[in-house]
Length: 149
Image (tube, rainbow, N blue to C red):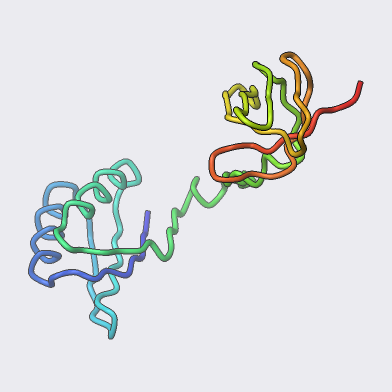
């Protein structure tokens, strides 16, 4: 697995980490200085990648960004579709009210196997067991509307 990173850290600390890691895990690397810090290119076993990142996180005052990962072989053959992970994906989804949801105290809904705080979008009370639809999100609270059945 080949990984390219941009790194902002003390050169001596980076060199020490890379030297020790390369010796133990049979990794090869190239370190190039640029105007923002360093470009680091590493070639390592994919099983050791997590350990490498863990060690990078231990460098005091270091900041890094993974720019590219090239796997070669099986890694290049993976065909995955990325799933949105931000909360906006919940808008438009239907849920079940686990408790009454009123405008003052709110309530809770179960959505996707998880319990969420909820408030009604208008001044109506949504009864426990009713279906609701998420219309927006405010902080960690879902704003929902009752679905007429």
